[in-house]
Length: 383
Ligand SMILES: *Cc1c(COP(=O)(O)O)cnc(C)c1O
View (cartoon, rainbow, N blue to C red):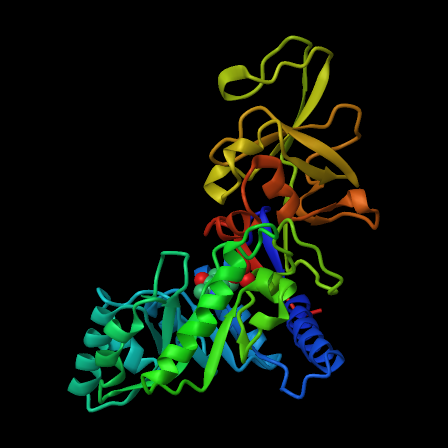
């Protein structure tokens, strides 16, 4: 049984996106005449693979050639291993208050982003007689996780001296990669270069360095280093406001079906609060998808869906389990397909993606994708 509202996840598109990014990195590196190898890809599958389902997505990326995946916490890493993923799995999150057993049992590669996390992992590794490979996170100005870039001589020696821990990677994360005018982006890059030299000076010899999320990957090849860390691009969405010539396809299509159609008289009120009041006789259709499915309440009066190849507005309140669309003048009936994200025809107007939906309600496409609810079944296709 599958509910009428479902998310189709095109694993073929996902794999093509992965390859398109890999090809792009290779081509650009060659065009630059760089003798260096093109960077590898850490495929980011945190938050249930941005709502797409991390088990199937992780396996599909691995099959497409991904050598390393990244997730947010130990629990997500364990879930990937249970799904059968064998590639290296980097855990981004802070682990100082986590149950660390999963790191060892699922053979995850943790990030160490503070002295206390380093101590906790050293202790856990020593207790198991294990040697644990880790990536070191440097905070270059986002002021979130990581060792401060300007304080490493004081904070790092203890970690580097930990007998059961082996530094294999070093990275930072950029706070303004999607803001082309913001000077912090360049400052973070310069600070990371200095921090890498400092780590080296302290005797740290990481094999790989990485910094670029999707936006930085598109913007500045100086940040590609040894590995890049795209998330959103893999799912076929370009981080706004950036553009790219990369041939990417949205991986998720969200569809439903009309379950009821009814006429509304001029001046009558529709939905909670009765906020939509047509001035002419109107026809509305009910779609069984609401905020419990992750559709934002702010779509009321701002969002559109596709029905019979036409864009029709979401009117009245988005309810917990359903929403209302204005289908006045259209011949529609129960059972008709409703596209919430995806295409219904070949025209540009017959295409809706998470970036457009996000713009309509003042949020980011990441949030649109991640919030698609657990009630919505993911149906996987490999075209
Ligand atoms: C989420 C995340 C990424 C991927 O970001 P996108 O903008 O989706 O490409 C990369 N690195 C880190 C540390 C992240 O948390």
